[in-house]
Image (cartoon, rainbow, N blue to C red):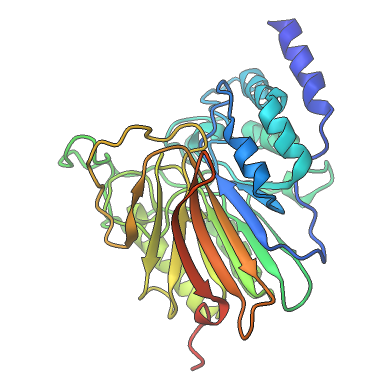
Length: 351
């Protein structure tokens, strides 16, 4: 085992850093996804590469670490690095990333996970974050950066919904297989923690035409009993209120975690249509259609169970207004769902 770990560590070091470099280059194709098991072949990367995205956003469960032993965590990251399909993807596009519970280290865990600081170091090492980066001093992996010139700027806001999150409340009355957690009734606890909330407010004041906000758990969906922002309804309302008070335009949420794909729309949250595009998983989807459609009052269309990834494209030069396409694609690249919206629709009321 020791020799295997050494070989994989050497293989990982041969790759260039995974993080995207902010700059003036126009970004108009953004792929994203979650839930990729490091022990599986991950052929879906070849389909993603064929779409020629500028950036890929990892939404969490990027490996299935599930451990308090950082040598095991590192071994699993190195397994991902050594995967030839992932290696080709790594050479062809930039990456941004946040984590969810399994790469954080413990199923459904928040602040109670005892190795969160150590896990953060492993995450930052794998994604090539410089040793002198402020992200090394931060409690949590949240991060933001802006790509593109003025008039075509995309701000990527990578939230950390694990490091500071209060433990969730379980609901023993929920039917089996509908999720174990209370939905919408808790008034205490936090998802982001106060430092991250203050940081997020500053980010939302920065000028950008489009803001892609990555949350490992769903923001808009509220009916199921699995992990989501609605488990702490006061935090979800705080998020919506912050988007309103900062007058942040162009917001689109992308999320993972659920082992299914769907697009949700909230028309009454922030003064303009709020989309949440959920893509999960790259390898860990529910690959068999059961005929059971999970309730989601905000869903556009239906659900998709197979392996999938998301793709957002922006036609910046379309007159009179840029056109945004939000897509869910299957492992073969076919479009399963698509929602189109012009950028002027995603703006706060003028009043």
